[in-house]
Length: 146
Image 1 (spheres, helix red, strand yellow):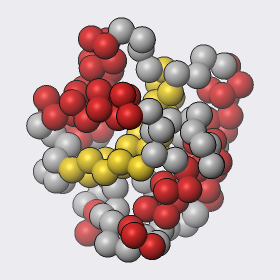
Image 2 (cartoon, one colour):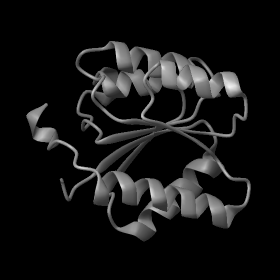
Image 3 (spheres, rainbow, N blue to C red):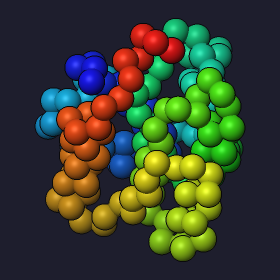
């Protein structure tokens, strides 16, 4: 397990981004969080294109579904069909309560699907739980092997 966990947060809501980053900072496990605000930027980041040419490969992706330009469903499909990216764990973190979104996310090989709680305290607990699970319990490969 790497001590320098890197999370790519893909979310178009500045408020949710701030809350997520704040919750992650309290865990001290994820030392680096990169943020992009839509699916087009997410794919450019992951493929190290344009302004993201020097982007660090993330250990984990937190992906919202409902975003402009390219939504999270499309991003998930692209990630999981790309041989260079498909092994990066993707956690869907969204407000969507549609059962078809849950089913489609898993069919597209999301690693898990989590609904964002409305309550700020619960939201913080959920983000901290994600961070703890993926970086304190799960064994992820060292990113230098990619």
